[in-house]
Image 1 (cartoon, rainbow, N blue to C red):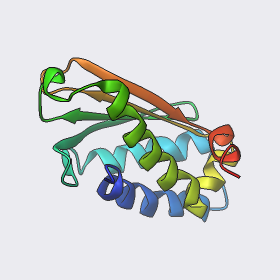
Image 2: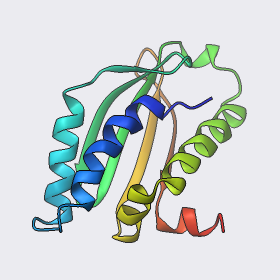
Image 3: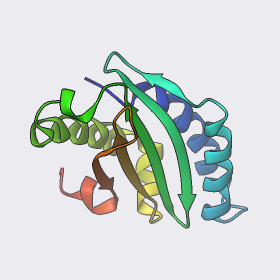
Image 4: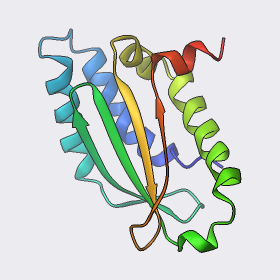
Length: 136
């Protein structure tokens, strides 16, 4: 299950332009531009998991990605079983992509928030530089 694949493809393409830009603008302003460009493709259905990427926001060096399950929270089963699957997939994607790793080393963190079809909060997690260090 890779809930991040389509969204990350767009995000990574834009991220490469930031990483290769020589940092002429601040990381924060480049991330703002990245979010603005990514939002043009939203909402976007993600994989086969009945999930939709609905928003991306940047505050400082924090990138907040918001997703909605296309089902009610009560239909998702035990969230304690669901969250590790999505967390592992997102960590694997973020921590194995060289461009994302560069951004993490520059202090960027990625926050993922998930809501159900009625916008009821389901779960959240953060990936930062320390997350990827823990994988070595």
